[in-house]
Image (cartoon, rainbow, N blue to C red; front, side, top):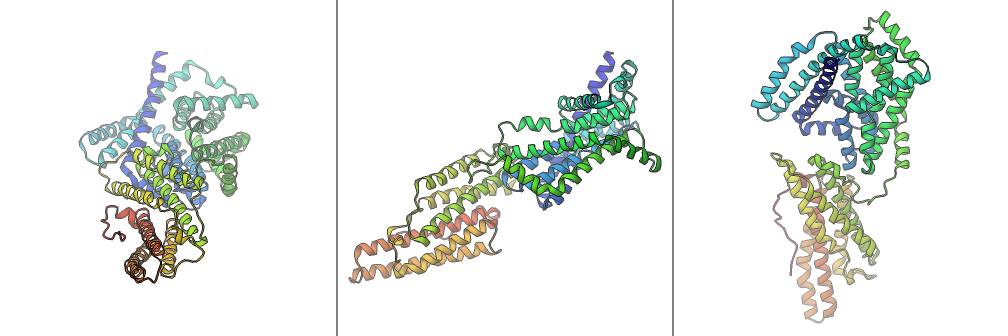
Length: 539
């Protein structure tokens, strides 16, 4: 009996360790390319579903895909509807583990032949350099999976001779519910639905349980896969709660569909065994797992937009609008965290641009205490978030992005101090020498807001730079004209000083808006350490 327990525990442990090493190794080997590909090839929810399925099948971890999706949604890289599609794809992609186990792990004694993979992977981890070390980790994990399956299989064969697990009820509502509950608890204990499915397949292959019992256990494993995420969502951000709720509802709904349609699925599998040569054991169980998840996708995916909108109504985001992208859980992925801080800075900049432009358009005072306080709080929180992002060694692009955002924070703080236009610009009629400059600054602020929101032409940054340079030139040319007219008695001295103050204010606003746009826009992220060769006129 002790030997059986030791084999079962060791087999499950080796399988879980192998899955973890395989997932971590593949993610590290792919590096940021996996994140970029997942975002790049995620468009409409249907396309997101395919991306999620492929990514999960590649890294062999639906949990890793779901965590990445939560981060992308929090950072604003994906819409919530796209994230729901990715989560559905992750649920389907995780069924690939069952096919690997049924085809390679149980039909052939692959554990013995997988031992060299463990050795090769370990030597690569110790001796190789760069990303090849991560590939060695993945190879060792892949080999450990099959060593674990073989150990688990030996334990299950002993368990079949000692206990009559087939005596557990699988008929009637209570009997089916009990088996589903066992599968759910097994998944929660193992913290892996893949491990629970592999254990179930091994038990079925060893003759410990009937096929219908195994099918019910797999349904329970699919539902249990959401428990860990649901617990992790307690106290988490709204995007995290929304993604977890979508995952729970999808897997629970899919599991209930499979439970009620189980007789139809069993008949379909019998037909496939007779006419298509499907193996009646673990392969049929893998086919059942894939089939009922696919049916769930067919039910939910066509209504994913309405489903996502409903979840957003159930869990509204009542937090600060400007900093809702800043989720502390993103700190573990610096690239995504930097994108979140960039978006928060962009939202703050757009609000600041609109506030200043509104003051110039409507000629009214815009320094409302609550509004300005919200901007200052958003800027402070984003600065703290940016300072908390851990540095990444050997990642020059990320370092440049961080420096660019630090420059942007400095310019935003300076522009915030120019929020209230001078008195001469808040009058009903702007003096003639300033009207052209005011129009240019309005255009700069409008173009900056449109560019940061992705609504401007491709050359919007060069357009802002040119207009800002033109404002500086008007300041240089207009300043001596105003002073000479005041000296000749053609203009009141107090009015002249007010106009000079307004000229300087317009020049500074145009300059800081250009620099903010540069550092937060596309070119700014690639050229983060550019020397500022042009400064505004300073008297």
